[in-house]
Image 1: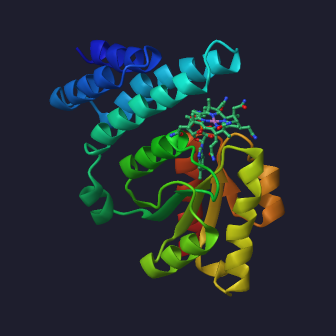
Image 2: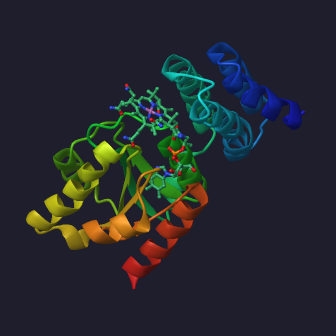
Length: 218
Ligand code: B12
């Protein structure tokens, strides 16, 4: 049963079919499939195929937009299954998440966010294309432990530096741990801009967040 649902989720993305993605996501919820598994083994598998086809020139931006739309709709349904109340109750810490200024890519952010929530982090998602001053204001008012940014383009990488330097300028840098991820980012870049860490994927992101929160408490 759950194998078929995973296959349906994957195929809905590969076939660029948002309606089928919604049907498969609802079926996953009804069958009580673990939402993280559904995202990892279903939707993400489909997205991997799409990204590969794009990189090989077999698909173009208009198709990518449809695939991303299908991914987003299904992911939103599955995310309802990851209990935010439970995450808050047994919280490992508060993570403020955003895509950096100028960047509207958010598929990876959605995956990482779900994984963090599944690992009992309380996550507040500020969305896409978020200015650094908005990030800093929210981090302060919400009392974030970790500020996590996603950047997918070389042109938006500098926006990650602005988050760190903005905090330094406002004298609040030591209140937060700051992490980044996304294809053009790297550990070296994060070190250069004075961030606390870089994660290559959702599993690394969770480990990084756990380590940093532990370090912060000491
Ligand atoms: C999907 C996609 C889009 C979709 C985005 C939809 C959405 N809602 O996200 C759409 C079609 C809208 C789009 C638009 C554009 N795109 Co685009 N897009 C892609 C594509 C094909 C896939 C990205 C993706 O989703 N990957 C899958 C996810 C799962 O991977 P991920 O994001 O890397 O996330 C993982 C890790 O990085 C990590 N991670 C991510 N975030 C974080 C955060 C933290 C804290 C941590 C620890 C870890 C972490 O964990 C995630 C899970 O494993 C890439 C090509 C590629 N090969 O990556 C181009 C790509 C990123 N796009 C590109 C470009 C140029 C654009 C446009 C400018 C195109 C245009 N001319 O309009 C616009 C940009 C608009 C803007 N201002 O942002 C370029 C960027 C080139 C560059 N300069 O670096 C790429 C590389 C394509 C290319 N080869 O040219 N795009």
